[in-house]
Image (cartoon, rainbow, N blue to C red; front, top):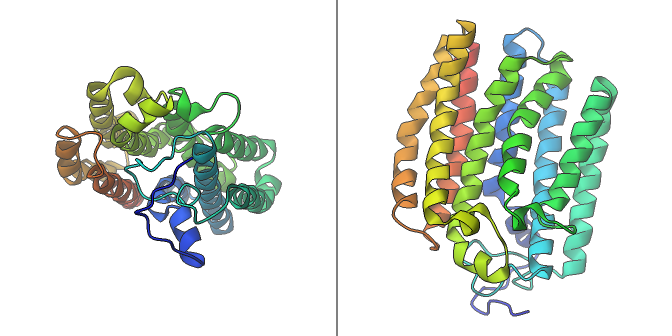
Length: 301
């Protein structure tokens, strides 16, 4: 399996910093921020549980990134023609065996953090934690990897959306409601938009590697529409919640995130299969974080 000779060799802590893909961590943090703000608004905030949920979410995201790094390499999806940020295993910075041990270790740490949340919230938290770890591996591993069969979008929408926001709220309030679940769709949709940009950038190499993402299955036009619709619906969800509950009116200021999204939307509709989409990927991650903060502030006002 060939490596990209143009990639400079790095070592030490920088290898693992790049491998954990810090720009993707917003997808883990954003729903925890929103779920914690909603619990605080309802008078049921619990900061130890909130911090444990945040740490657990970050560890699961990092473990998923490491597993993705490993499985994409061994399955041949990461090659010298890759347009995205350098992958540690593919670049030869880390051996496959070391990367495999790394994602197992990180998932084990996530489970240890989750023991406190399981003690607090019981079997529902155990189910959420184990399924999150399992699907983090099955995302690109196992006999039917989600990312290779067009199912990753569903996984991202659910687990980075209602499951993450609802789970964060539940471990603090020890109850759940439909408003929290509906609000959770927003970060799930923007995380799906993140995935869509990734798939749009890699559409050519994914097709060659047999990775049948939705962009590969249905084409560039579908991917562009998926990106636009995901962001639009996410920004409109607070409006629906205000109409439904007749409260938390300031949360509609998240509509302003649409202004932040305009440059990225224009780029997505102009290019595909290009490393220029790496900047859109970074900007969409920032958009997700800004959305979670703005929504949370508006919800608490």
